[in-house]
Length: 200
View 1 (cartoon, rainbow, N blue to C red):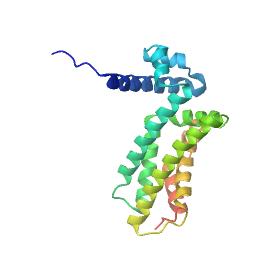
View 2: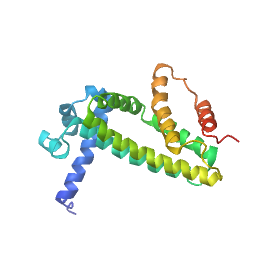
View 3: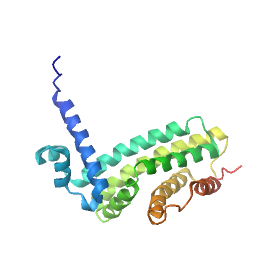
């Protein structure tokens, strides 16, 4: 049976997915600063023309990867927290974040490196900030649902709670890069639950 020919839109989408997979591999192997469009092009097997038809820069590629990851993590958080409330929900979110970091250990360091570089580039930083804001908004909604199901009014602003969770998610892998046993998950969970006023 002859293979179905892809239409142009399908081909563009397939190329994009392959480029993002290559970019993820190169970024994780070399870091943001060490990665180059040439290395990503070589990894993908495409010509530079194909790469530039999809992405204008290395920053564009990284932000596209980040956008995918944000959507995946937000959906995961909502699924993990569904049906849970209060402290149990926060604990489940932290556990899921830890598992995610363990599954792709270099991502947190890569994100920190990118954020440090983006902070020196106003346009890139503004684009990153917009994506980061989406993460915060979805996490706020998840935290609001956890509080509502527990029948509790948030004792702190939901935005600040979401920011604190993300700060821990970024900082913990950096601490563990120096000392693998730093910030044990049980202590982190207990501290965040207490900080959010969800302790029983």
